[in-house]
Amino acid sequence: MTADRLAPVLIALTGIAALAAALLLQFGFDLRPCILCKIERAPYVVAVLASAVVLARARGGRALTGFCAAVFAVGAAVAFYHVGVEGHWWGSMVCGSVSDAPMTLADLRRAL
Image (tube, rainbow, N blue to C red; front, side):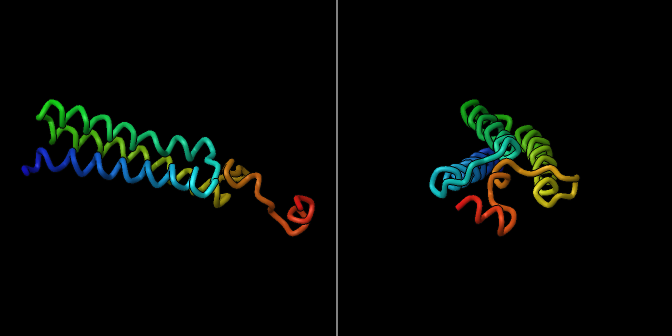
């Protein structure tokens, strides 16, 4: 397999694996995603769709690699922002998936 064909296959497999992991965590372990969690999935969807187009056309593998690098860079920036929200680096914002979780022992007792 040539590099022009290998790159789209690897990008598609990576995107599918990342999306499968996110869906497994969401539905298999009942972790509710916040809006940032959902936005972080978009680059993988775009990369899988772009890879499918390139594989169907049988050309454009090098352009796809550059395009996906840009898409994944945007995804990494969103992920960094999301980590900052959960780590309270940007103030008092809270990720939606953890905002419903008890924050103190008193909150836990009230929830019970």
